[in-house]
Image 1: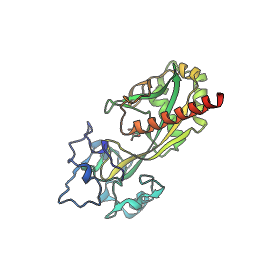
Image 2: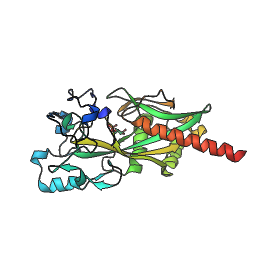
Image 3: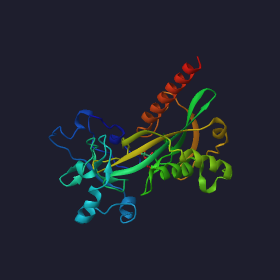
Length: 273
Ligand code: RP5
């Protein structure tokens, strides 16, 4: 059974969670007492009817049925959210987090995101585009919530907004934009789909993502005018190595890409022989 770690840590905008030991995460283990902190951020309450669901106690059966039909990949394959229900309410499929309520997440159950991994080779080293998140100050992939849009659109939109400050970047010209459009239109290589070990997760709400890899030609990569925007204070190329520490479990997916690229390199040099 997969464990979550970051989903049990403190988020800067959250109160402290109840401590949950690794051995107590699994719901199948009966605990003498489990009293998670109840927290839904004011921003979520203010967004009810916009990007946030209604409060569970005020929800009509129709609203609940709509939620039950959302898609989750948290346990591997595609399922309806109703497969995660406990007493009629979606429950974190990985286990206890020490907090109930929605925290900063608008939706009960799954909250969908998309994460682009954009890489290049620079001086023989694999590099990846990262942003610094304004909320936790951590380095992260430039991903974002799907907000009802398709995954391909979200991947491109988030990259443009968070890594290139699309709206007001004076160095982002039509030629570079055309190349970026072409790169993202190639569909990329799916690296991961499912649960994110996000520090905002709770027992009632969690993040899931689809993470897609795009490798950039070195010449185009050199021209990319990286500039943090929206939820990102900065954007940069970073060498991929084991000392890199990233938000949530983003490093797992970057490592997968690095292994894939290394295998491709080996194959290429083998063919040259
Ligand atoms: C993570 O949160 C996802 O992997 C994605 O990077 C991000 C989406 O949330 P926001 O950055 O839009 O807050 O779980």
